[in-house]
Amino acid sequence: MKSKTLVQRIAPVGYGLLLLGLLLAPFLGAYPVFIMKLLCFALFASAFNLLLGYTGLLSFGHAAFLGGAAYITGHTVKVWGATPELGLLAGLLSGALLGLVMGWFTIRRQGIYATMITLALSQMLFFACLQLPFTGGEDGLQGVPRGKLFGLIDLSSDMTMYYVCLAVVVLAFLLIVRTIHSPFGQVLKGIKENEPRAISLGYDTHRFKLLAFVLSAALSGLAGALKTLVLGFATLSDVHWTASGQVILMTLVGGLGTLSGPLIGSAVVVLLENKIGEFGNLLAALTSVEWFKTLGESVTMVTGLIFVICVLAFRRGIMGEIIAWLAQRRAGNSAKH
Figure 1 (cartoon, one colour):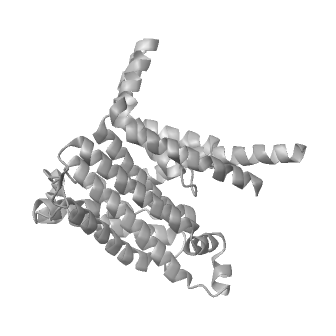
Figure 2 (cartoon, rainbow, N blue to C red):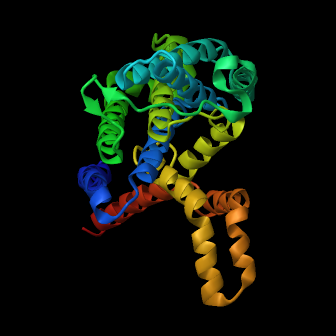
């Protein structure tokens, strides 16, 4: 119990420092659009972690919520001329609706069968996005304007968009924290650990799992909607199965079932994808080995290698291992006294 208290004491300080760093990031030379992209993926990974880490449901179709909402938001803002907040709401609701449909089919099966259902439904949406006229096919939906928030705040400035994006992500993360620590969240943990026992206690586990699925899908949709407003486009890569694999990687590398894990995991993966070329050039300059210059073209291979190393060396993920180490250290100190 004391070790848990230690982690709980450290966590608010860590989150406070992270928020302070994010507030000051644009003034410290960070590129706002890159940080916003990172924030969108952090929200996406946190939403996925709510489903897998706390409910025990592995979805291989979360790209459907991210990409589907991205297209809906882009179309709502660009073609219908809606304001950004209505576009975000449309993305969130479309994610929730897709989650309701996918969840209804998925929760009736368990294990690999449930996972394959999510993958199949996600691929169906991918081919629909490829064929539907409003999505732009292989070219994607381009030129989505940011517009004016509530008709007043012009989001065309990267700095203004950055703080709006940060506010949305922080509020969504607080919702996830509140959900996990609520009685509803405790029931979800109980279902993950022992579903038959939860059923014997009188809980309708199907209903709880469906609610968790819809909430996770809605927040993933919000991440996709926000990403479209930030970057100004939605593409097929957002709805492809590789995006689902990417969010699983982020969650496992950061730490499954921890609040901070997806934040760290998404930062590691996004930084790898965007900065591995620069890192390769630096290594080539330091070691005179020309092969390092090709690292930028082998992002998938390097990411896969990092994933294998993390799974073998850090089974709990980065934050999972840190939390376990703090708990072990606290327990050791208590035993000495």
